[in-house]
Length: 311
Ligand code: NAD
Image 1 (spheres, rainbow, N blue to C red):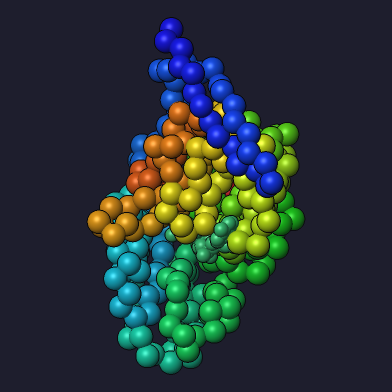
Image 2: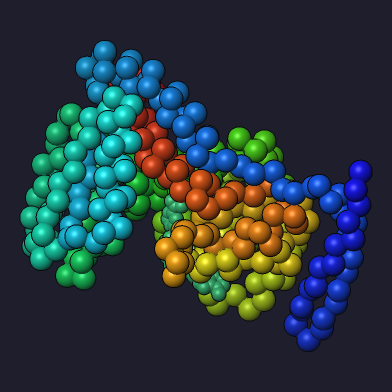
């Protein structure tokens, strides 16, 4: 077995220490393949969709898009196509960017009352003249497949979620796939957004981890990440988490999706730098990204199953 003397520098507050770690030179982190897991899950959803369809409850998702943001258009297309590929019903409703908020609210009210629709999603961000919170709260909590409605946020924080926000839900599935036992683990979530950071922290707490949420005001981020068994990065800064920020053997989950000047995608984790330090790691692309839409499909199927009384 080849042995590598690996030199890792730690820069602390007011001090700088270095240490050597003995590592197996062939040892790199196990990669948690989100693309493969997403595909596996989507295949498994087909039977549930068939059962529901046979019972007259074909799962239906409507995605509302306001404006012409190119990234949002791609996301919406992928969501709709993801549904159609496994036999679900899905449609998108597109409004001009200057549409009145009331028009969208009226459409949401109509969809709330439509028995063929189990999930309603409003693609964010909305144009500036919209009150985002008001729009999200207008979606029936029973059809809020994004899990952003206050009622669903409350249910999650009470440990009895109805809909789990798709990205952190996908991360939990990845822990499952990687056989990561979360109970008693030290977990650090970097980022405190309503979409990722906060629900992620809540899910980790519910799973028995000891959770620290770090954010832009955190004084010494490295202090927290270096002692974590699990690091979830949801920062929005390319290659932000470096190898010397993580504990050898830690599970590193990269939620970030950043576009580099050369057009390539990269995460919030410096993958090459962390690969030999982490125990398990998710790549970008092909990590958390494909799981997010997959869990949107899961949430819509779950909604239909509840409606059909089989969940
Ligand atoms: P956000 O901008 O709402 O939140 C970013 C968070 O990072 C904030 O809470 C902020 O406090 C924190 N932060 C910023 N600078 C920091 C610093 N120097 N140190 C510590 N914390 C810092 O972003 P978001 O919506 O949570 O998304 C985060 C990333 O995840 C983005 O790259 C986004 O594109 C990506 N994302 C991916 C998916 C997916 O499906 N994979 C889904 C949602 C978001």
